[in-house]
Image (cartoon, rainbow, N blue to C red; front, side, top):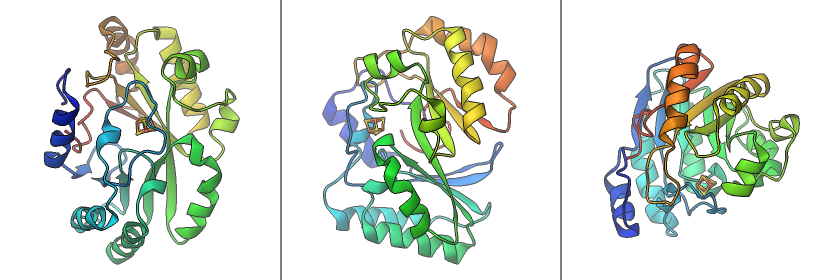
Length: 248
Ligand code: SF4
């Protein structure tokens, strides 16, 4: 888990040594890889410092990404591919190599992440990956528009859940922030399960941004909501941000 206060240089350095391949053996079994792209096009989410895991050099990125993708065995038929940003920020050679590895290893389902600004490009991505089932995951964080956009600057200028979820199958939520309550988290989970196939709840961990975890909100979640959803097959819960086995 990332310590609470890191300088920018320390954050950059930490990315060099982090784990980039893991297996998720709980609930929806899948392999997971953390690749590197040219960098998040948005970069404004107030709570985020992992967008520093990026490089302009496409050849270096491909070299790293190939070495990580070569670890995929296809044992579960599903792979989650993340890159500290959106799939649209990966280079073309990496995207082609993802297709090759998944075809060769018998992977039928690929999970990608994308920011809402790429919403219009998702149908074309599904077409490009024809032959695979794509599960697109949105970093939504909360349905609470005022908190999400007014405070945390997530960059999703839409309120209606049916519009937000139109091109996405799954969503990430971020809990444990100042301004959240038991009721707002409960509403997020219920709406999330109503509009997405699966949701992933991330509990806010300290990082190098000014946003700090709210211990009382986290305690409420752990006491009231965690017991109810911890065994729900449609809900992943990351109490620590490395619970999927990738990252640092
Ligand atoms: S879109 Fe994702 S990677 Fe980019 S700043 Fe927001 S949380 Fe970070």
